[in-house]
Image (cartoon, rainbow over all chains, first blue to last red; front, side):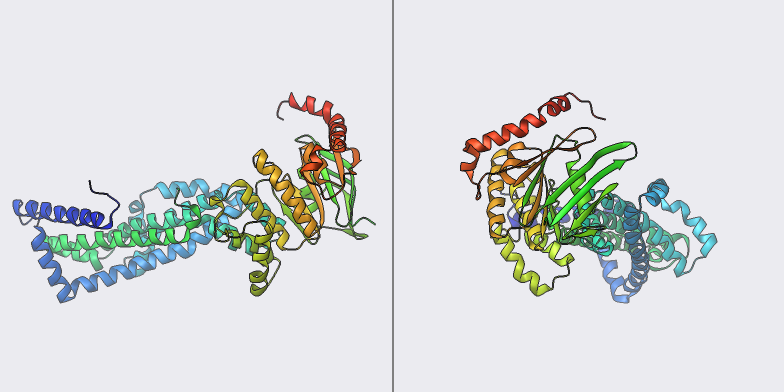
Length: 255
Length: 257
C-alpha cells in the first residue's frame, strides 16, 4: 500500500489533481461555444501571448500596487488599533458592536458611497481595498488580544514591566496568531476589493483586462487572467500561512 | 531587626473587608509561611505586599524605612506558573532579568546557571506547552531566582501540581534555599507544607481574617523527608490544624458569595 506521507506520493497526487483539472477544463472548453468558454490549451496560449506583449505584466503591476497599498494601510492601522482596544476595555465596549457589524457587512455595498465621496482615482480605489482588508484584521486582532490571559499581565506587573514592555512581551506575541488569521482573511477579501474597485470605480489593471477581454469575446484572455488572480490569491494566502506558522511554533501545532 | 515588617495591614473591597489588622515580620533569610482556609485573603495579602493591588490600611517597613508602593528587590512565584507561552525556558528565565535592565551578556551568563539550579538543564529550548506542571513551576522558580531577589513571594506555588511532584518540589525548594537563602513569604492552604517550609507559621482565620496565632516552628534545618516523620512535625501540624478546624468545617459548607 502507498504511504500517504511519502513525499513523492504527495507530489504525484498534486500533479495528478492539477492534470485532471486541466483535462476537465480542456474538454469542457472544447464542448462549449468559444463566446462563453475557452479550452485550457487556448487559454494558456493566450496567457503566454499576453505575457509577451506585456499587457498582463502591466495590468498585474497596476493591480498589485493597488492591492498592497490598501492592505498595507489596513495593516498599519488595524493592528495597533486592535491592540489598543484590548488594553482599553471601555473603548472596546463602546466600539466592539460596530466592529462586528462592519466585519460582517459585505463591503461591496459601500462602493457607490466611496465613488460619490472620493471619485474614481487611485486613492479612492486604495480606500476600497483598505475597507475590505481593515475589519478582518481589526476584528481578529481584538479577539487575539482578548484571548491573552490576565494572569500574564499580572506576572508582567509583578516583574515591574513598563507598559511598553507589556506590549512587546505579551500583547503583540499573544495577539499575533489571531492577527495573522485576520491578515489571511484580509488577503482574500482585499483581492475581491481590488477587482471590484477596478470594475466599478475606473477600469484599470487586472479588472480592466477582464472587462476588455469579455467585451471583445476574448474568452481565452478572460480565463487566463482569472487563473492568474486565483494563483496570486493562493500564493499570498500560502505566504500568510507560512509566516503565521514560522512565528507560532510555541503553540505546538495544536490549534 | 526584622528586614520587612508589616503593621496593621487591611484590605477592603467596598463593603467587604478581606483581612484586617495583619502584622507580620520577616527576618533576613527567614521563611514565613502563611496558612489559612481558602478565601481568607492570603493571596490578596501577598499581592498587596508586592504592590500589585493597593492596601486599604497599614504600613510596610523595609530595613527600618516605611515603603510606599511596590517592594524593591522582590520576585513572585505564582500558582498558575504564569510562563509566557511564546518564550522558551531560556526566554522565560531571562524575562525578569531583561525587565530589570540586565545586559545581553549578563543574561547569557546568568540564565544557564539558574536553569541548572532548578534542574532544567537540557530543556532550555522547550516551550511551556512541552513541559509538565512540575517542570513549568521549576521554570517559574528559576525566573524569580534569576533576578536575585531579597524577598521571594510564593503564592501557593505547588497547589496546581500532583501530590508526588508537589513533595519533590518542596524539597527542591528547600535545597535551593539552602544554597542561596533569601527571605521568603510562603502562602499555602496546606498545613503540612506550611510547617515543613516555615521558620514561623502565621495562621489566618476569621471573617474578615486576621492573625489567629503565630506558631514558631522549631524543627531543625536542613529539613528532609525524615522531618515529615518526626514526632515534633506531627505535633506542630496537629496544633495548626486545631486552630483552623472549626473554620475549615464551616467553610466546607459555605455557599459561594
